[in-house]
Image: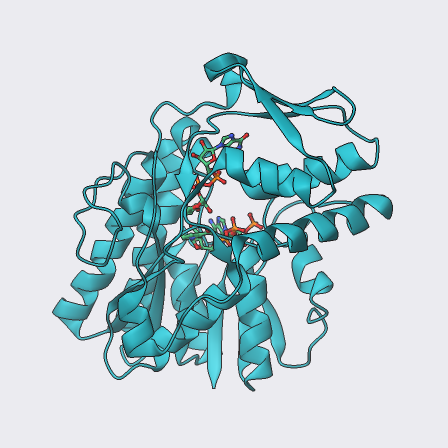
Length: 343
Ligand code: NDP
Ligand code: GDR
């Protein structure tokens, strides 16, 4: 059992590598050449020196590099997790996002078609493809309406995966994953930005957390459980499309409340719109305020997914509640900030 994971330096790549190593796979995890590569996630999981983990330099935008990767590793499963995955940045860098997040997937599909069409391929699709949602909750057959260059690029990769399945009989499955978070989440994403800031405020290292649209509603699950779903998709008899989600949605504001509650701070909310803020009820200090600089040109207002198909066909279901997830993230950030480092 040999698997390639593109994007092993990311949140999901690290958890998936841990899972596959536990299952006895040899894992080829790809990373990009940068001036200082950061392996903090696989180090935190304690798998960076695992004898069956091979770190391979690779860029998804390079077809020849993709062909070599498939050829030299002789992998039987490919999990394409690499992406420019930050929605906010995709508005500033739409073409780079298209190259990596959209066309990059086709480099891998082409390499599979050329080198070994028997390889099973997982595409990291996203609830961002539903964008301006056409139904509540969203399921596999809900029409798509992406609202960002990221969402549009992911939709292209999603359909190309289906196209390669139908045209060349390649086992390509897409997981339409709703937001999934963890202590390994990047700090640019809202949940981790919140938990890291709450930890810093608790420790007296920061005064106030600034956020953009706190009315946005998201369906947040625990990343470690979602990578198990990815693996199950590639063990199924047939390639398919599956939604992984919790079927619960909350606002960013609710997540802020939960995170402060995890450090025993109850909030009082004041103002509205651009002037909304949250005050520590015990001290009277402003600990969160809205800053319009974090607004996006177009927003996804509400996401909530029904994972019934994954439950029935893959036996997958989420287990960790949002309260548990939030507390786990705040605890990890308290520990890291106490120790004086936080990635
Ligand atoms: P991260 O942003 O944490 O990780 C993305 C990974 O892609 C990093 O390892 C990054 O490397 C790598 N990468 C970026 N550009 C390239 C490139 N040109 N060539 C090779 N590797 C590259 O994302 P997540 O782990 O959160 O998500 C994994 C995948 O799932 C992504 O495709 C994301 O879009 C998708 N997804 C995520 C969801 C979520 O809620 N987390 C929900 C639905 C889909 P580097 O460290 O060098 O930047
Ligand atoms: P999202 O995640 O765009 O859903 O994409 P993100 O955490 O960035 O935003 C969630 C919501 O929070 C609002 N928001 C802020 N977001 C950030 N990052 N920073 C802020 O200060 C802030 N204030 C409010 C956003 O406007 C948004 O509505 C994530 C990524 O992992 C994608 O790769 C993935 O495909 C989707 O989840 C599912």
